[in-house]
Image (cartoon, rainbow, N blue to C red; front, side):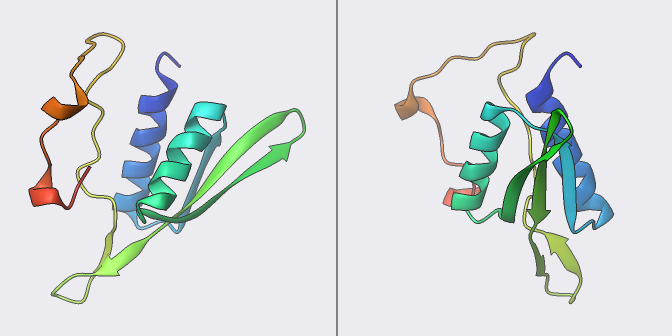
Amino acid sequence: MIDPISDMLTRIRNAGRAGHAEVSFPSSKIKAKLAGIMLDKKMISGFSVEENGNKKMLNIALKYHKNEKGESVSQIQGLKRVSRQGQRIYVRKSDIVPVKSGYGF
């Protein structure tokens, strides 16, 4: 695996589209911190780090809401990593524009 953060985001995105209640993947400190930020922003219901033998697994409980048609839709929409290993993007925090009219981050 070349980029573990992109792998984490892809697994979360795919699980949300498939309607899974939770998703698990190998854990690291930065992945747990990202899950904590997602929990603070109310994007997920919760997360836990569990040990399976000598490996740690991060389990994330996804959060869903009902749309106007009454269908369950994942709380996480449009998840995308902008700065990645092949293309680093550096900006000042004052230059970051609000996304989704202030409803995203």
